[in-house]
Amino acid sequence: MLLEVKSRYIGRLDKFGDRPMLINFHFSFGRYIRQFALIVATIAISACQPSASTGEAATDSGKPFDVIFAGGTVVDGLGNPAFPSDIGVKGDRIVAISADALSADDADITVDISGLIVSPGFIDNHAHIETSIHEHPLAENFTRQGITTLIASLHSGDQPWPLDEYASSLDVAPNVGFFTGHTWIRKQVLGMENRAPDHDELQAMRDYVEESMKQGALGLSTGLLYVPANYAETEEVIELAKVASQYGGIYVTHMRNEATGLLDSVNETLRIATEADIPTHINHHKAVGVNQWGWSKQTLAMIDEARETGLDITLDLYPYTASSTRSAVMFPQWALAGGPDEFAKRIADPEQKQIIREEVREIIMNDRTGEDLSRIQFRVLYSDESYNGKRLADLAADRGLPSTIETGVDLVIELQLVGGFSVIFHAMDEEDVIRIMQHPLAMIETDGDPVSYGDGFPHPRSYGAFPRILARYVRELGVLELEEAVRKMTSMPADQYNQIERGRIIVGAYADLVVFDADTIQDEATYTDPHRYPTGIDHVMINGSFVIRSGALTGERPGMWIKGPSRPARVTVN
Image 1 (cartoon, rainbow, N blue to C red):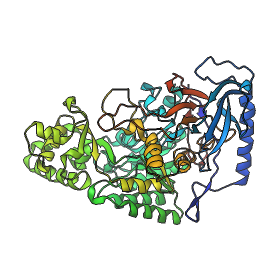
Image 2: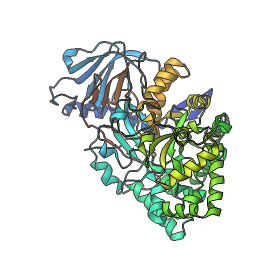
Image 3: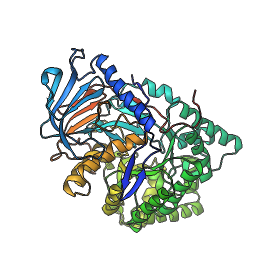
């Protein structure tokens, strides 16, 4: 059973160049003192608790530590230089960090991690677990990446309801947190209709946000690229975000357009943040489409300028040059209104079909991959799964068709009529990925799915996003220092969600830890062979329990519910 996690929030002053920058809310000395007292109290309490499970019999021997990690190098998650230290764990907490060797006689288990790095467990800002994590309770494709906390920032996904009942019923390995989802709320009130809500309907949507926040949501999320969310005007989102803001929520978004409309979408996001007075976070920031390569220079400058005015804006990314979504994004939103049957009727009308063809062509050419059909890869082609992992160009070739944009448009429409497909678009430039990654406000996510090994054809990010940061971008390319990369994956997202007892190695923090070899850690999943676990990660501990020990899954399920709000509420929540 997951436990409810509540902790006070303290802001942290960080550096952006030579300019001081408040990452989240204001520093309070009084609050710091209270937090220090809380840490002292947790150490005292943990000393009285039964030992947390370590994959062996969970009995309290009365020793000072359940587990000692001995001889490792600590990367603390706060950006400080790495340092050698032993770490002692008791219950679900870190209770000792010692430059001197801790005695093995003082622990039930001592793990020699000489030559290895120990860091806080990684926090995934966006994973597709919102209504399915109970079906994958060990979340192995995530935990084997060193991920100890998963955040369900719903974009197009459904929201569990009631949220509190679902979250509190879970028995899973990782910690999990949930947002309330605009898409789900809109479907409850308006279905798939392409129109604005009337006064009563908008109030019903507000009520869903309010109740979700009261039940423990971290904030409001949108997936404005997708039907039916993209039927919403900006004003609708602002009104819902105001409610989340009052209850201490933050706003996270898959923006309306990450290609030709990228700059307008960033402006829309900044407007929502301003008018709703809400901290805002852009998920998987990117510049999609060859014509948009390099636009990250402008978008990051826009974000920096917004922060100068006092807006709390942050972002994240996944470390790949290919995105993944559904085939529906290649169609104009009006064409899909009303669902598959209405789409089929429009295609059956020659005049409407021609208009749709022209708009699909425009989207593929400018918003996606251009005329190269080999850049469109099937994840799952529901009407013929023998093409899973193959390209649109392969399908054209097998049918003896020319590999042209006109062929691509015809095939995409044909396939959408029989259920569509999940798709990987090879449409980004690594220079943009690196530029976004290096930005001081950037964090990391997988945008991944919970998958069973060998089942389906996932994007490799579901298996390798976090190790890829450490392998390619820290070790191989050297575009990030190890300490900064770990901070982007640990304390930065922890602070986003008011979780100052996670994402850092300090005495009193939760024992969410990952042990890895910085010289060998490697993502192994590829676009053609995605079901491959990363290598170089030896141990993963969550709340004091091993979920991965010596590279093996333990079966433990120590995860806690990361309950909102993400900021101090402005209203009293009963």
